[in-house]
Structures are given as structure tokens and as C-alpha cells.
View (tube, one colour):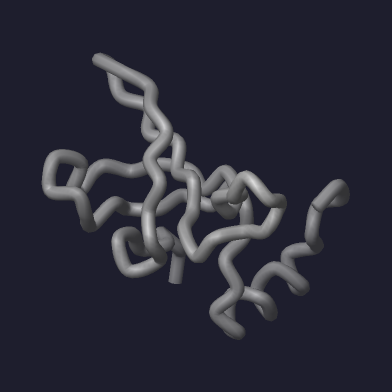
Length: 81
């Protein structure tokens, strides 16, 4: 998305369960990174141009920066309620 979503539109999408790029997530699996937070970068793209059902998540810690490929059940979106 090239333009910023208005707060109203963002809230409407969140209610529909839509995940937005750049959102903060809490990692549930793998156990090595469980409880850490990261940012959604994009859907994982396969070599032939289609997207897989996995997400690329950037994890930035004091020791390392890495990108994890996670299934949707392996992270939880952190949203203010």
C-alpha cells in the first residue's frame, strides 16, 4: 500500500481480521523466538511469482536481526484494544 490508511479504514480492516503490512506481531513458534516481537514485512513469494501461505517477519533484537518465514498460526498480531 503506497498511501497511509485513515484510522477509520484501518479499524474497519482490523475488525474484518485483515493483517496489515508493518504491523507488530508476537511470535508463538518456533520456541527459540517465542514471545519476541517482530514486524510483518510481506507474504512469502515463491520462485514462480505466486505467494505462499507464509509471512516474512523481521525480528530485531540486541544480538541479531533476522527474517523468519512463519505460518499465520505461528504469530499473533499485537493490537491495542
